[in-house]
Image: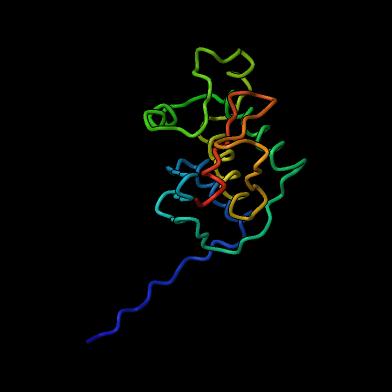
Length: 165
């Protein structure tokens, strides 16, 4: 009986390197799916995170002013982002964050806003990667099920994205 070769796992470098590298692929039109509850991330044919296992080295991400402030900033960009053909098709699926429909965007949002696919990747990948690195952890003072931003009440982070209960 022949022994099967164990399939080698990919090595995507650090979380920051993976974030940047796969962001480039998303900008080039590669499809992506990030499931925060199951802790999965796919870009094109690549499985970057599977059930919470990152195929690379887990190191802290550059979080700027702080994790929650950065999430709030990324959410603001996502919420006011300009949908395109790809994101319109994708929105038929359940999304993890609420973005404004095109007819609710301001003129400035339409002229200067980020592309929805790009903004969605930035927000969802940042949340997933900060959970994996331990930089974003559930705080029991937030309540039982979710954290809601004071800056924008539409921004909600679910407890099950941060815990494995």
